[in-house]
Every structure is written in C-alpha cells, then in structure tokens.
Length: 452
Ligand SMILES: [Cu+2]
Image (cartoon, rainbow, N blue to C red; front, side, top):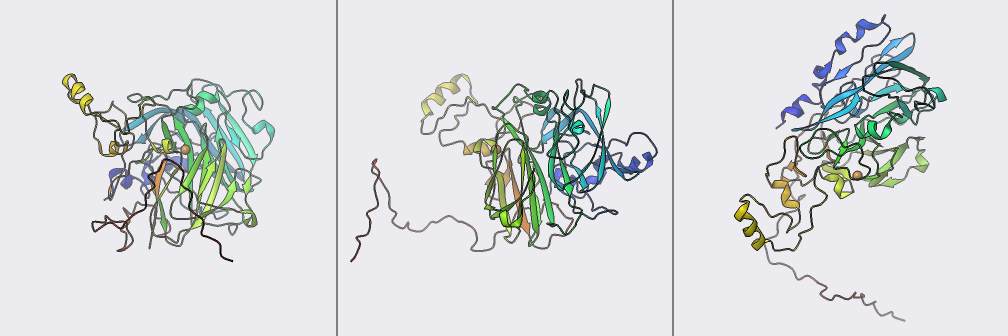
C-alpha cells in the first residue's frame, strides 16, 4: 500500500542524488563538486566505510551532503540558490535553499575532523553561513560585516575550522536574515563523537522546525511576516507528507529537533516517556537527564531526546500548539460553533449554489471535505489513517514501532493492526449512569467526615 512518494523514499534515494557518481572524479580540482538533490524523499546515508564509525542521522524528507577528503580535511560544497521545494504532494513552494532543496542538506562529520566548507552564492543578494553552536574562530562565524564581508552573488567563500566537540548544531545565513530565513535557508550540522561507544543509538532522526507564510494559490513566502505564519513545517514539509519515523521494537532511538522559526514549539510524542539528552550546548550527563513526554524547543535552539522503543504501535508525534498542526488557512474565519446557519445557507445558496456552511459543529469535518481549492494549495487538514481522516496538517507525523524491521530499513510499514482488546470501540449496550454537574456554580466535593 505504498504510494509513489513512499516508493521513491527510503532505500531508493541513491537514484535521486544527482551527479553523486562524478564525486570521485574531482579530487584534483580546486572546488569539490556541489551535490544536488532533486527530491523531497528521505535519503538514507550508509555507514562510513573508512575512518571513525558512526551511525548516520536520518533527516526526515532530507539528505546528507557528501564530502571528499583532501589531505586529511573533509571538504563540503554548499550552494545557496533559489529552489523549488515540494512541501506536500500537490504543493510546490518557490524558496531559497542549498543544493537544490530547502531545508539544506545535513552536514555530518566527526569530532576531531577539520572541515573546509565552500559556500557558493547563487542568490541575487549577499549571503553568509553562520555555524550555530559550533565552537570556532571568530572570523569563521559567518556574521556579515562582523566576521567577514558578505558573499556577493556569484562568489564563493571558504570556511575552515576544527570540530572540537560532538553534538547537534545548525547553519543559516547571518545576512538579510529576515528574508533569507523566511525563504527557507537553514540546515543542520551533526558532529558525531569520535568514540563510537559514546551514547550510541540504533536510529537517529533529525527534524528542523521551520515555517512559511504562503497565501493559498501562490508560491513565494511572504517575507515580512513576523508571527502569523500559515505553514508549519518539518524540514520544509507538511503532514500528511512528512515521512514516518520507522523504528524496530527494542531500538534505542534519538530524535534531534532544531527550531529556526519565530516561536517555540512544544514537541509531544505519544506512547512513550523519554529523556532529554542533548542541547545545542552539548550532551546532557545521564545524572542530569530529565524525563518528559513533551519537550519545548525554544527559538534558535535544538533539543535531542532518547527512548527505547518498547511499545508497538502507531504513535503520533506533533507540535502541541494546535494551530501548528494545521495547513494554510485564513485567520479571519469567524467561530460558528453552536450557530444554526440553516436559514442563512438557504439564502446564500439562492445566489451561490455551491455554498457550504462550515464550522457549526467544529472544524473536524474539514478533514473529509472535498472543496475546490486554488491551484498549488492543499487542505487545512487532510491526512487519512486506517479509521478515517486524521484531521491534522503541519507539524505532525507518526512514530511506527514494529517487530522485525531491519537495521537500515526506513520504509513505511503501513498502519498498525491493533491486537484484539487493544482498541477503543463503540458501545451500543445500555449506558451506565453517569454523574453530571448541571449547576453553574462551582460545587465542592464534600470532604469525608474525619473519625476520631
Ligand atoms: Cu509549534
């Protein structure tokens, strides 16, 4: 029951990494080839075949930037450029990003590595790259005018530094930030520990929280928006087209979440409690890790959490701000709950026959409505599950824990079949009596009389 996107996803990703074949042929040239990605499918990176062993991260609907070794230095080539990103099946956004996509590719390296990162600017204005959270020389910090001059259109700059600590970091421009970040320029930078036995996990997922304001029927984000974004995305992707987090039962799992939106996001995962193990500042020692079921990701920060996947099932993972699990909508929709619009509907239909009254019983029925929408627009909520519409959009996905999933397999296993007795069901028998408070005043529960 895989759709085309899922078939193109995990496993088949090598086919979409354009020009990776030529990567080995560039060793004697000045610039490393700039790898390009033309697909929003999740690309699985194989474990390194030489050097320090590590378990590569899985960037949901993203990919990892290839590198080449040049006299002991890991060389990467980022290209800042306009891109077309598929936010969801049926919706393309015209963004700015890196190497063909927004968000940009994940950069992965190892503690102790020296990295050289070429940044070519194909945008119509200055840019730069700031390496958020990395400890490096101040001239490599990427703040235009402060660390170095802006990278002019058509020019290439080189950043070079040692990775002195492991952890999870981010990268983004520090040049015309309001515009460049609203247009989707950001990515994540993972530094694996040089000791492979330090906090190893079986599955290591990566999510960048970002947001856009794209009017229905249009393609380009509004860059002046400060808080009223209408598309809440993970790695520039919205539910129902964010890939699931596929996990084998018993796996030790890490989820790293970075936030480069303009507001905080309490990320909530169902079915588990977990421990917060890493911030942009570094790893949290075991004695200081605290348990949560939701973790608030502040603006300009990342948090990683870990859990052991003991509970089989399909578990929702989402931002807990309910407007962030919705796709584009008008913010001026009035509240109609409890309003009887029958007479009004008749009148409006006399001159607009296809008028649909909405919202009198909540907005849940939007999930199964098929309305005509402007081109390049997807419904506010439209994911379908095994039991009907999921009534979600935006920052939402599913953690799918199954038995017998092989180590490098991230293919969607379909929906979980709940065992008998483990699923809520409709009661059709006689109803037990239930207590009800019909007083408008607060009723205090009487205290039991104390004895003695
Ligand atoms: Cu949120």
